[in-house]
Image 1 (spheres, rainbow, N blue to C red):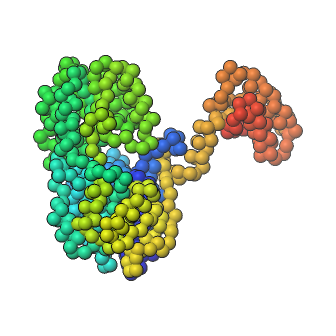
Image 2: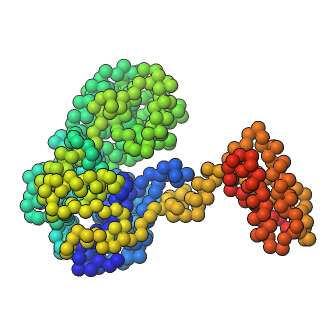
Image 3: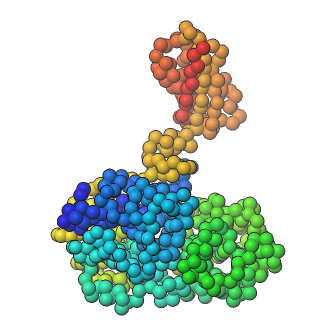
Length: 545
């Protein structure tokens, strides 16, 4: 697919899923990319934490890619940059806070000198070939959430990024209704819009309201208080600093990502009124009612601060009567991990408050009233939902049509959408996929390594080794080693039987070593299936003497 004298849109991630956002716009042979994020792995990818987008389509056209423009600093929008941006070899563009987070990631990977990072001020403008960009600040659950107003030869695109409406955001100054209406007055071809909370019948709520809810909860607490929230939520960190000060508590941070976010935020002019932060030792020496701890790990992450606190492997300790406040939304898929942490806390007699018991969290994504308001201000010809599962995007398309938008199109990753002329219409489909970061290696998510690992994790593994002489005669007896095969008390009995069947299969001295290896492998696997009902992975080593 080559972008001719037309305006194309192609999502390589984030359409039909929540996370891993990668969007391409093409015009007159050139492409620009908006965001390059990751998603987090689930049990389908054993041993994996990060999942990356497969950028094969644009890698094959990298000489036509003009740059990568970032809307904000959440991992699902910038997280893949340290692993993929250097290979693309194009400049990055971001507002100051987001650029600070990106610079930290590139520095950790030793790429700061290899990737060009351009800092654009809020409301700033720049051009990439046929494309003109203007940052338009919108409220979100991170500092410097931005929409992009994209000028093209075929019309203007308003790409929202992640957003919400907030009359009292605590951090930053989002665009007003008048400013957004002015953009609409000047004409917008397409609104490319966040779909995450389209089923929420209510507005997402203000960060200012959360301040009052947290103040009430912390003021009533009798012991030590831990509040867990997303480290990137600078407004929430500021809110918690205000709460600590008002309640006579000293502020403590637990989590490396919190330290990094606070440092970048202060550099960008945010959080300068945050109270002094105490270290963990002092937090434990002070009476519990004098301490407020902000910790990472609200999604149950095993290595985050809260899980380690719950498991007594962190310097911060909690005891009966202390309080943990979950000032974050439970992301679908994390229920089991969060429940595990909460059960460990409950076993200590620790009290817990979530958004179900008190107003301690608001979403960073728009509910239906906010979407309706945006439609009224921007008044696009076309609505293109993104950032959601298909059910979210289909619902937003229906919502937009009922609010007077003429055309709406539901696309998914890989669909090539022509926005103009004569759009919107799907004119092709390109291959998309997932990569996994496995240690320091990037692999196909459904390649040989991951498929082998899934088989081993489900069925276990058996290694068989035997020796034969120059005439193909078995020397000694086969040796077997098991890993993850469900044999406990019967282990030795199974090994004896499997060893005997392996020896019988090895008799004959076949000239073709692969035929012999396969015969032994099948014999041992049949024995394992007979004993366990499982079909373990069997590896056979033949030693010729």
